[in-house]
Each structure stands twice: as C-alpha cells, then as structure tokens.
Image (cartoon, rainbow, N blue to C red; front, top):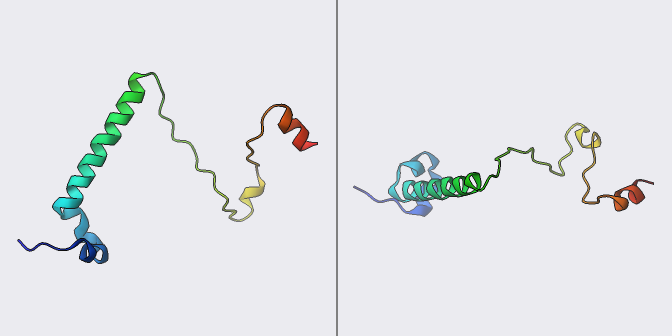
Length: 80
C-alpha cells in the first residue's frame, strides 16, 4: 500500500479521513472529548450549546444588543 505524505494529503482533502494517521487522531480526539463530557456530567454540570458572539456585524444585526463585561454598579455608571 502506497503511503502519502501529510503534505500531499493537505492538498487532497477527500483522502485525509481515510488514512490511518488521521483516523487514529480522530479516535483519540473523540475519546478525550467523551471523557471530558462524562467527567463534567458526573460532577453535575449541564452541557449547553451557547450562541457564539462575534464582532461581525452583518446587515446591522450587531446593533440589536450590546455585550459587556461590566456588572452591577459599573454597568449602571457606564449606561448613564
């Protein structure tokens, strides 16, 4: 069986998942992610898919809300 270099596989994306190296990395990553999720679940944490807040402002949607790290009195002072 002919072995392809990782450099070659970067240019041919459809072959990457079929290689032993990428398959092994994917299995390790999956196992680590599952162990992490299981650990936190066992500790009573909940897994929530939160929306990603970015600085991208598409069609004025960024004007709908403001994200701040201020809280309490600092937030009140900043909005005056």
